Length: 151
Image (cartoon, rainbow, N blue to C red; front, side, top):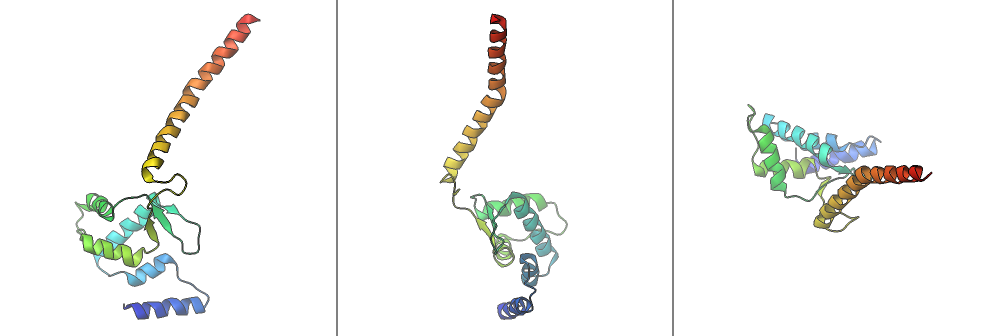
């Protein structure tokens, strides 16, 4: 389906009070072959699992900083033994661009700055949690024990 026909369908649906969802728009754009449909299904599940859904009217999904080629490599790894085959990197990019324009690769974490800083903060918070959950109860128990011993 060409882009003008697609835009016309989307506009008519909105005029009728039935705006199309992102999934419905994707199905209109989707080239129909078994490999493409399988790739689309994988992408949809993958983005749903790893993405952060942004609460805006566009229904954007943000994924962690990565290269698009690494996402394609994950797809290839998951479907390397599929009887339907896998799509090429170019077709993968095309499906992403046409069917998932609302999925964005985050350049940095807005709260903490760069991705490297975010990773360091995650490690720090993990260590703090471990210290608090494992060490603090022992310290409190020791303090209680010594106070009780004095009485």
